[in-house]
Image (tube, rainbow, N blue to C red; front, side):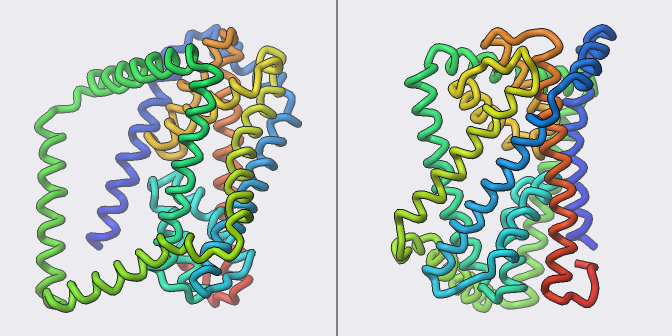
Length: 342
């Protein structure tokens, strides 16, 4: 019961921030702006709304293959569909609980492919390290190619984020006592949980269990040294991020106002969309705000700048939700689950 209550609290807080941002964003729009956005949504070229979604699915194929490559270096050979569907579930769950999807995809392979959870998590962490390196490469390219706009955008978005959160807090009159009270309650709850675990299992057993889990976790992280084909690992990694970049560039074609934007502009959108996803679940509320600021610096203003971010975010979120639910069902069917409760 306590575990479910904690998950519910995390869900309410994360979604609450996103919903508050949406409310603030829409509240800043005039009646005329809202009408223009509605008209833009109707006139969008939906071929170029769907095309980035297909590109995104292809990038998930390469992500699945990269993960399988790392797991093979540990002596496991998970099936493609279980791996691919687990990746789809990861994005789905991340909409509600940031980073929960990362652990959940490892849990899927632990259950259906009998891969130890600690080792699967280790390879997942290694994947994230590779992605951080790729993000660094993206930033380096943008600094070289678009340094003036990139740094100006970073300052504008940072200031806009601070102002937005400040207005939301001020508007809702969040009492500092309440905020600190929640932090203290979480801290005390963590202490009680640790104490209960020590009492139930014993300190020595907990330490031994942690050592075993940590050993498997480390093996997962260093699995890169045993990859038989490092060039294939590099190829999968490059394809994942090249397709991410291409998603934004293809999406520009949905409106005449954005159709002429460059690959560099798509790279800037890629970076700041990633920032929005890291701050709120699925970029809820922040994604269209950030994209509007980016497009404004490239000369796209008015309703088209607002509509582009809204249409892209809505389409991507809808795909993730539908694909996530379908993936959960397919996993149960393909692995002959007697029930869909989990």
